[in-house]
Length: 598
View 1 (cartoon, rainbow, N blue to C red):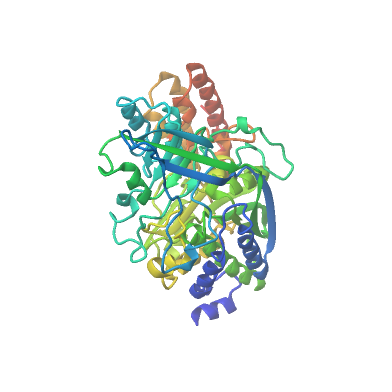
View 2 (view 1 turned 90 degrees about the horizontal axis):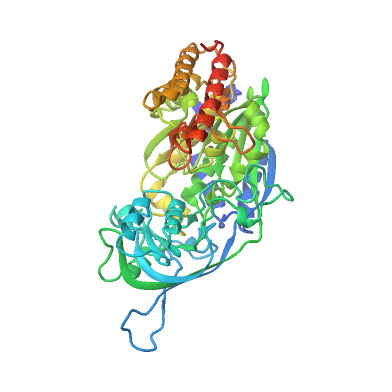
């Protein structure tokens, strides 16, 4: 009743208007079909999101891109007869399909085949070797035991991105790679397995991209609009040259043999043959967005985003985040009908192709790079908004204060000070547009990641039966949208970023860094006053030139974060050139903050 009275009295968005039961229906509607990026089935999800935005009275924008997301058309894996087998012995094919959940008919059809996105292709055979987690050091240890040229690596998920595992296998000389999820990581070693508990059943399979890189690989640095220039496949960056496949724990036990998983990387004294075929015809993906123009600063953009695509039904990843975003749109739309207008422009985006390497969000950022660099204020990412009971929030330095205020208003823990990592749609906003980024969610352990079993049944049975956590996440999103869309909200990362950069330089060796250290000291002192105009633009002073861009200050996203990445890699001449650029940018930053360099 109180929420109703408030909504009638005030035009501003009211977080209490969020409906948990309505969100249950949203998740069910999103997961009614598979949402594999670029598939015919995924069009239903795009249409549903557009319908929700339109019903909320918001301006709807739909943007199509033509991208390289090759479809697996054939996969084969078989154990070859062992030495000493009877004459005429033939390979033993393994069943590569997932098992189904007897309690959930949605696991039975309409799903992407077990596959790795953007992997290599071909038919290869060779000695099977167990490569642990697939780190460089594990392949080095393995190479001391057996020549790796032409072998097939069996690799355990976890520890590092799957694409790095396949890349390491290729660099070591392997002809192919197989990746499985060990029950110690998210299966029976963690607790009761599905369908009786939330952990991974042994017959499920983790899909995922294995490309090392983001965006469409054939249009790096520019938007992959239909008809846009395309690179030849031979020039695509980050696509592994060897075929790879994900396999279940059930199949991994057959590959490992009676002795089970070795304690260390080792040859397995058996051989396999594997094959991957693909259709590389370009496919079309579609971002669906809603726009609420700002009343005072329409060119200042606050963007909320959630990827809509999935490897199957994708209830947790990322039906939860999309559901929160769509509920937020409903509440904001209701407020606009009562007369509320955000002072900054609010954009709500449902991205396509995230699972293949942040493709939809990256192409959108590349398409709108000018306006984002000129007026982008903040980006909030909603990826897996609900997977368990534990709340956490994160934000780059400029968003810490705003996210903290929003969390406190909703009775949630404040975010911990941290620098962003990689792996989701905030990356292009940070790395290409130089925007402050953040995100939040309710998290916990489960075993459905990228499998056919990631359905609303799991959410309703084991994760959030009453959708209370979904509702809390949506209320926080509404509050944060209200906060960030006000011009009185100062998104100021200048001081925190510059102090952290100064401290990082102090721990780096080299007399040639003295000038840069001096500039960073002065930059931190200048920023502390907090009087800089447009403080949300601070990171843009440290963006590399050209449309591809990158942060010169810090590699904050991706795998292997580090400060001043161009100073710790490359030749002495490359280091000297990078240092000259950084000194110039730091001097410009000091001037932009209202002081003069020493």
